[in-house]
Amino acid sequence: MKRLGLSVVAALVAGALSLSGCGGGGGSSSSSPAPTPVPIPPAPVPGPTLRTLANQPPVGVYLAMLLTDGTVMAQANPTGAPGMSAGDFYRLTPDASGDYAAGTWSRLAAPPAGYAPYASAEAVLADGRVLFVGGEYNQDDYRLPFGPHGLTNMSAVFDPVANSWTMIPPPPGQDYIGDVPSTVLPDGRFVFGSKLDKRMWSLDPATLTWTAIASTGKNDNFAEEGFTQLPGGSVLTIDLTTIPQSEHFLPASSAWVQDGPTPVSLTSPTGTPGGLTFGPAPVQVVGGVTYGPGPAGIYFPPGEIGPAILRPDGTVFATGAAVAGQTAHTAIYRPGAAPGQAGSWTRGPDFPGVDDADDSSAALLTTGNVLVAGATGAFYEFDGTNFSLTAAGPANARTAVPIFLLPLPSGQVLALSPTLNVLARLYIPLGSAQPAWAPTIAAVPATLVRGQSFTLTGTQLNGLSEAAQVGDELTAATNYPLVRLTYAATGHVFYARTHDHSTMGVATGAAPVSTKFDVPAGAETGAAALVVVANGIPSASVSVTVG
Image (cartoon, rainbow, N blue to C red; front, side, top):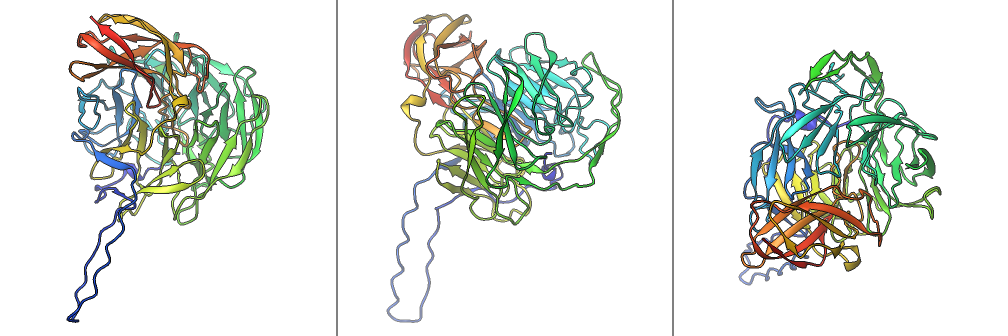
């Protein structure tokens, strides 16, 4: 259940994020005729930097999705300010050199009137379109208990090329969806688990139709859980109702395998033990699709959890939520030797200081570290052993400081916060990827023509991880290839929109995979270096000529 602190903020939080390890020196005066020399402070330890975007978004934005043409789609934050809506979307386009910090913002088309979701499930599909499913809130109604539009079962797909939306009929008999855990399976199907029960559904991207999936052996309903795709296509989740249990889903058999308890608590208790009423949902026609009616009911939120990110070594770093003022924990999951076998857990390092990852965002860095935005607005990195503060939050933060993290093809991470006085920054980590983590190009035409489509084949085109997650809703996985052209004569950068990837799996190893890409009609001509990028890590370049 998404925190509502950001929807009722009356003023911006003053101050900006400051890097840890950077300090100032001070002087002192003395009445002594021979003052003691002031010691020279040690040089700050090198660390990541935060770079402010030259052009800030026109409104506060939070959720962001990396499109397959290298641009970013961002949703306006529903602050309740006059004229702002969760149905407002914007695009960030990098400049001619591929720099997102110098990029520009433009307005995108809005969904049909009646669908303005917040805290929904999202995915970039294999064909390059963007899917929005459900929403904990809708139509800018953020009441608790839920208003009649809460936990909506509406869904829509956005076509970035046509700049248009298409509404999707709800799964048969699924009166409410809300904020649900979800992922895109290797075969391209989008799947989610029901917030109010144990039902699972898959969406066929080609027909935009829903199919019920068996969820044999599932411990509990999917409320507030998150999905993390594992190598081979299994899906890990940590239970929030039958705590501290965990389990993973096998798509081939539609069965859940028990992974046992986490070694430490990763969940916070419910804040509303009496439950929250919802419904009845009215009959509505949105974009030509009829939704409703839906019955009234009571939802009992089980608590919260933090994001869980698959790392290049095959382990999952899972972060915990905690009651304010208490220490939050982490845990490390190792998959079993075979998909049908249970994985194992070990305890991870606790959050430094008093912070947690309740409804927070995390992203995989190109270094293999996991970047986590704490509830205080601070940044932390987990390197496989240590969990360290890398950038402090605002010193005067009184409540939750929402920060959304999105890995970019530049290797940087876009950090968005609708409540800070600087809305958008780039987190620039130290270090680089190991060569074995990079995608490879096996075949691509040496001569490309503007306005035409081509096929690229290689390995690990989807990266080693989904690379981004919030605890349950607001999913922004980046496990798909991007194709980047850098021209020899000008140094200008163009992204060729990719689509129809042969797989949406992660860590596909030496298996040959492919994607199609469209050379922009407005691209330059001449010699260029072509790379394929996955999770911010580029392949070795291939020389091509664009005509």
